[in-house]
Image (cartoon, rainbow, N blue to C red; front, top):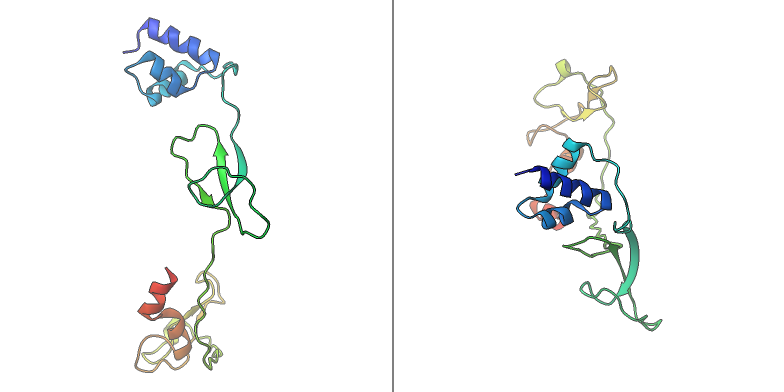
Length: 174
């Protein structure tokens, strides 16, 4: 597949500054990755930049929709969206809003009292104590909440609200 003639053509095109994709197209029957692999095996690191594409730049364009690339400036009263686009070899170019809209959902405020931790160690826990871990387990300061857990689960009322969220709220957060 890599004959002496093809290797010489590869060396010449690489020195001229062609991309691996362009070289693969000119050679025919070889992929871009095969060209890159051969370039590395031949240690062809230095190359001319005569026909190389300019470095990619980010630019900002004003667009009324995500499908438009450039538009004339809109009147000051009309709101515009900023869309970033790249310049360069972008065969499958995607455009995204520069500032995504963040949605905040606030849970109803209840009379939540943060319990004072009893600072229990693992051997001090029982079936009725809160097993919420506090701190880094690799340090001596590590402890468990230790407050009354009741019969509903492994945590006290406060830590249960943190650990278990209603299914409707989890769906809303997605």
